[in-house]
Length: 281
Image (cartoon, rainbow, N blue to C red):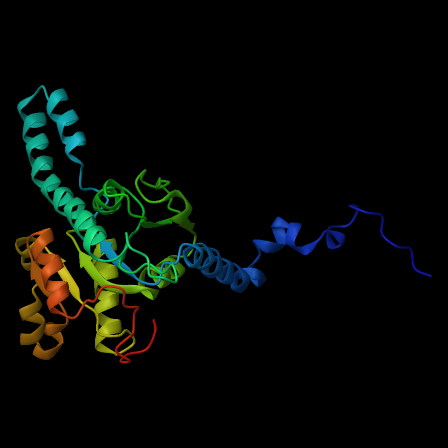
């Protein structure tokens, strides 16, 4: 009879779910995908979150409090000029904050259905800047909001305004994007950089390929978006059609963003894909 291994002597004898080296190995990547899908899913279901309104935007937009700190510490003319430049960016923070409050008060997040379901709950990338502002607006009126953070080399910290039990951290960008899109009833895309552009165009592509249902997509900050992306040039070069540009609308304020979403078919207490068109992302 072969000798049985003594407990804890051999690596192979360790319980699989307690073996960190095994779980972090290449062969278990699919399992890690599943875990990053299932954990947020269970928490959001426990909170009855049926649908969300997703807010994209830059982490580099300062809050008014940060601007005041810059102004207070500005000694040179260059420092003062930088503080005023940041103050202009902070106007977008104010709009995102008002948008988070407006959606939470009027979209259904504060009033669950008889079955305990919540619709149009604010959902952001969980970090600072525009993301913080949207979560902050929801927090200020007592509504839950979701923060979907991503593990980055510079160690993004979750903002303090997303609901603690709905604040998640992801290793894989694509699983984070999946959860951003899965329950989305509408999207508000504020000024941002590479990450915001990536998220914006991915959703637009899902829309025009009918991989996402018709949902209101609003770009906030007309001057910014017209300067950053020449959509008309895409049409002129034949890269997109004029009809594809109707999938989104540009506005300037939180109130205009909300009104545009309602005009484009957003409903209270209505789950995604309720109109039967499109396929779940």
